[in-house]
Image (cartoon, rainbow over all chains, first blue to last red):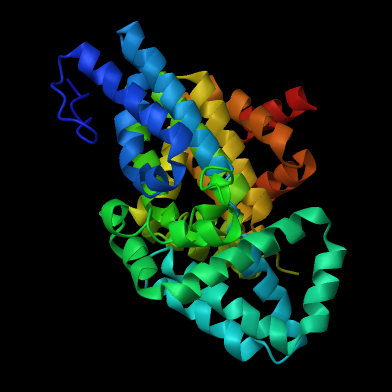
Length: 288
Length: 106
């Protein structure tokens, strides 16, 4: 049975349907009220949930569908990470900011997907101080959403400045953040900003707690599933992730895997070699 | 793994399920429209290459794939890019088929 992958919450025997269904329901319940704890585990939750979308036992299937819907919703409501890079891409053209802004784009190649974000966030205030007029016109040019994201970013900046080392750990290993960091850093802040910690859960989820790269990889593996529902669900996930963060997800669609290079050379050949092409097709050039 | 995603999406076009193919194309189109022109062209070249190596796919799903792409991307752009590629291609005997798809689509 391929379903023995559910070892996350409890050790479940692959053939014990009640336990398996209950584990999924546990995940669903946890997703409703401790989203910030669950988000870093998304890459590991996906292989536990998606294969069961087509489970032959209805109880497990419905639990999986519910859990999948909840997890998808949680990720969908995360603050979009695509905005800081796009803003940076506009900044270097205009002002002194480039020196600051150029540092983060260099890092993604060295470090896994998420750490650059935290750095970008910490650096944005610097650029904004240097060119405050621009940032103001920026926020007025784009309507309300940018204000919201700025608030979110502000709260994240506070978080990033107060506890930088744990955040780096979260993103680097992505494995064991729950007990040590993720629940903890938000709590003092939530006491400061809002009295009820559960009132605004989305705000407290650190952006880089969600590992795009690992999630995309986990979803890609689901393409191999024998179940149509699972494959469709994986694609829906990827569509959602790409809509949410086009730059991030596109990053993981490599522009140059080996066979792509072949295509590119072929492409450039017919782009440049008009004459050669012609000579190949007309081996005897017209003589006059 | 990293390098496997785009080929995986292309390979998924040969899926047995129509639903999977439609979602796959939606995603590919979404990525293409969010990317620059070179990505789109490379995608088209790869698609035609896939058709040329898998004739059965071309016959059974070719029409569906092209139509779905035309729903999500500019039909004219696809048509022109295909024409450019097919024009330069040396051993292509699929042009009539894909041309048929286009005329049906229009």
